[in-house]
Image 1 (spheres, rainbow over the protein chains, first blue to last red):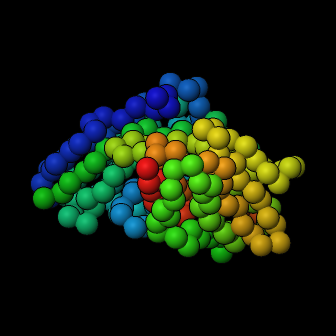
Image 2: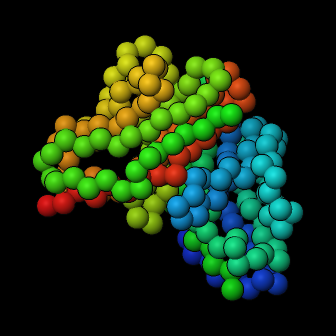
Length: 115
Length: 114
């Protein structure tokens, strides 16, 4: 186990549904990330939070809405998604986002299917 | 612009043979380089990193990687492959001369044949 948990592990939702993904890290890290993983494509960084403040939004559509209530928890709220949003959504954490050489620790991911 | 290339979608190697998974990068400053492994239905796991110093870096599960500045490469190696090494491997870079963003490659699937 990496110390990063994600729920649910699998999610099937219709295009009109609203759902949320949850991530929790037990490593005492200050930075948390959301990535989208699609087959044959590089990991796409979506959002970065450092000390609960959003430091990066990588031109993500507004149908994805992140929330970081504290340094240990990260949510991704989903609404009116499109079929092309089907992917594995990975949460990660690291000690910081600054100039350090910090590696990232990843959760197991949520496999999202939009029907 | 920063980028990472993993030129092989898949690498096949016989068990017991040495393996190499290739990675090249492009950054504006000095790179921080990482290798991660992903097993089925799991997230990425950190294997090793190069920050500075010795060009040969040793990591988890017997893996090592060689930093070559002139060739801008950071190939992952293991002297003797195991069937259990079969997984998806990702190279990543942080550009110390730029935004310090993590940039990941597309991944290389390693298949170790018994």
